[in-house]
Length: 408
Ligand SMILES: Cc1ncc(COP(=O)(O)O)c(C=O)c1O
Image 1 (cartoon, rainbow, N blue to C red):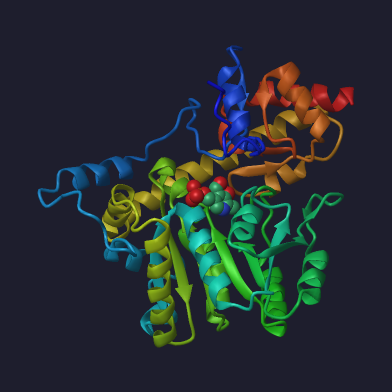
Image 2 (image 1 turned 30 degrees about the vertical axis):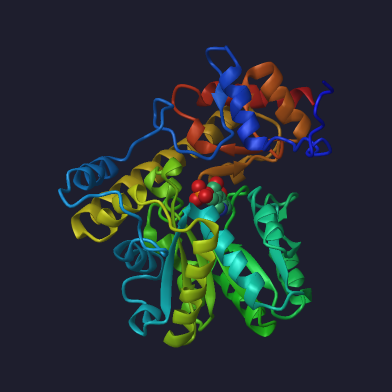
């Protein structure tokens, strides 16, 4: 019998995701002192994933609840979770909440919130609308918006020479963008650069968005994780709401709760009027129904317990400060070691940047040498996850960087 011919024989092999591929290579490396600075997941002082004590507590409450069952959640998710999530990002005293013009839809974490938001925008904005993402940005932004059918352009963000924000380039690009474009903004702890606009720069960005009638779509993957304060990390979003913008916020609870695999998130929508918000909500339900039917319950129940309880909320905020504080300490330790070694170049940006990542300025070739010769795994764009550093490996990493910089 002749071998059957597959109808998929012309399907090309897709390239592996660079970050997940890097993690696989790290895991396969038998070297005992290898260092993983690739994936953006928090590690404790011992280099291990950290289950937040507040999550353990809340999970025990969830599992011990005699009312617990495994029925489907409603299409838009757990109502208590959605309402509390809107308050977490906008602030409990937000006028948008009081006026009933803010709604939340539970999502498959931040990625899912971006995806359902993108799908809604594709259906209800002009087909020619362009989406602007920062350059550089998180590796998935382009794919999410292109998969939803948008043309995606970039606005400049990183000034390589100054190792900081290219605010002039950013503002010029937003001014030149067609009116009513969709602008994806990182609410805090910009990935991959770790550089955020100042409050004054956010005001400039808002001004241009208003002039050009752009639609801000905030991606908030690190609330509380960047500065240790939920309020401080939500300041940009809240300033835009106070300015009267209609906007979307994709909220992720992966990093700030350490619930990466549980896929907990929320798309928060702020509209000018309650009726509009309700119509948007109904469309998000329709989109969610067709895409995933309804979201998963376990992680949302855990987060819901915490963000609807004053005591647990206070504990969560202390634990956020623990994570943010350890990362700040590692920034300082790395900077100090590089200074002591006299490593050529300026390294001030390591301590000036914020959040999970630091954009080191190392070249792709230098990054490859770190992987090949030093067993230090990092993205080829020079981004390192600060959470992968600890007292036990930061000096070794600094020495490896020092050698690589001197060699090239
Ligand atoms: C900027 C940014 N947006 C969104 C996400 C989405 O993460 P998740 O889907 O786990 O919430 C990430 C995760 O790394 C991120 O860095």
